[in-house]
Length: 183
Image (cartoon, rainbow, N blue to C red):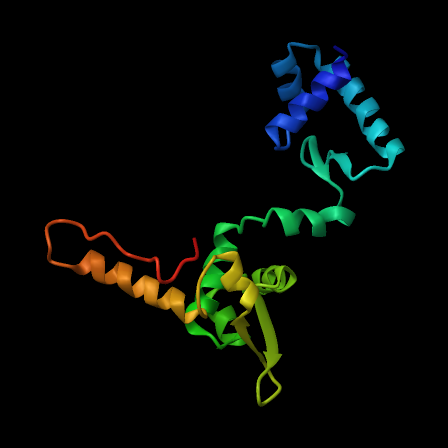
């Protein structure tokens, strides 16, 4: 087995950015030799003009090139970062919500809004005054979370969970969410 093939296997399996020292440790090889093989492997990927590349911005990672991300997102929806998910939750629970009000609630909301718009999970339309935007979830939001109905479904689920927690019963209630979630 060549060192480049072994490095490629490590990058494929870990699916996360690794430093040269980490790869060298996994493969029990000298860091300088691993770094040289990594550079050769990067050149190999560049030369073949395929859909994969090795990015070295924050460590080394094997990834799909940006040009092909639409295919990946279609097949494997991207997980939302917790902060973005919190912003989306506020939009879903309070929709339609003014973008300016959302910024008051979540200081870094603008970045999250851009990401959610790009993913198609929310839409943005100018309000009546034309000064701000109103945000609301899209049908893709319901599809992404496998919800039946509109975003108000999420509010109903949250209310059911709250009621279950506040219940005086000693035995915890099992929530039946089947009417809200597609199988």
